[in-house]
Amino acid sequence: MYEFHGDKRRYFEMQVTNTREYVIPFIEQFIKVENQRVLEIGCGEAGVLKAFIDKGCTGVGVELEESRLVYARQWMADEMNAGRVSFLSKDIYKVNAQQEFGGGFDIIVLKDVIEHIHDQKKLIAWMGEFLNPKGVIFFGFPPWQMPFGGHQQLFGSKFLSKVPYTHLLPGVLYSKLLKAYKQDEPAFMEIKETGISIERFERIVKETGYNVAEKQHYLINPIYKYKFGVKARKQLGIISAIPYIRNYFTTCVYYLIQKK
View 1: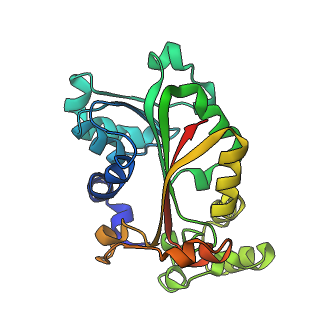
View 2: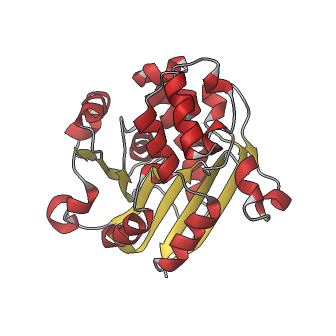
């Protein structure tokens, strides 16, 4: 595991900066972000949401793990006191938008979240309940087949954390590898079950009644700039155009979708 994964404040600041420099400019190719109402699902410590609040938005962060919201509330206390942001620890499927949020949102954000959801089609369809008529949903996620799509960077083994594509081993072999290196086998096998490809994501978007408003594929994930000092690089158009193959060489994708 890399040092910054254990330093929550540092990781929070990485998320703020990455969102300010890459996520928000991407969204603003389609709509202005300033003064919008924003919902972040799976907000964690809320570094992503913080960048939107700094842009003049009001926001709500939803996170299942209450322990992560302790930091969000601590680091965004001023914004909470000003009524610009609030946090809710709850299953998103059990939220009533009108009663608990006071209405819909202009922007919904899922950053590094959809690849951890079991019923992705159900969630994407459900989010339409929270969208204002012209609202948009942002997704940022690593395609499953990319070199570290199994989140190997979280492995306790320094050696194994640097070996690409191990998550693509057949389930039985991957499980044995995890056990042999004393990793959290249930957690990483769950990631293997929920990983999502570009093709599956685009198919779900279409099937649930959305259009893709904007998209960008990255050869080098923008956040690697802050994690590893490696400059972000957009994927070559010719690679992005090749279904399935592109997943293996694309470390991150950004999508903005809107109801038809």
